[in-house]
Length: 128
Image (cartoon, rainbow, N blue to C red; front, side, top):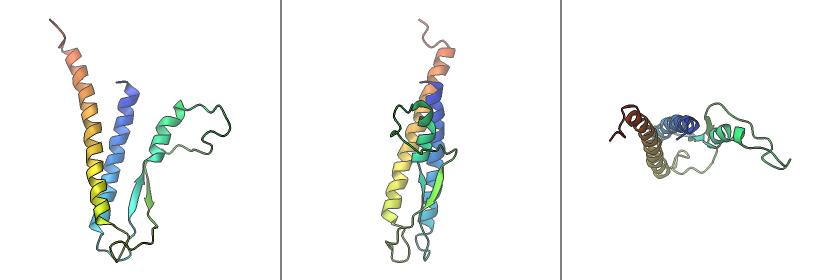
């Protein structure tokens, strides 16, 4: 695994951490009247990391993409009052929380495996 992949996984873990905070905030406010749920936009993080590798060969390709240095937290302006007093759907939040937890575990395990492999090489684990 290259160093750039480790860097991407580190940023993804940061995204997962931010997403977990926002989901927890949404769950905590499920009973708050007129609260508007929030979300973290991953697309901008992906653009930030992928843009240096994308070469524009045609003026119609990906115009107007601007890299963002940190995750963007957006308000969900959906006017559907899912819970009756605000737009927080507790089932969706719990599903997002479970998915975010799996994503975090995946990224942390990949980083851990990478460093365990390096440690094995340094200790001469391949000796016979």
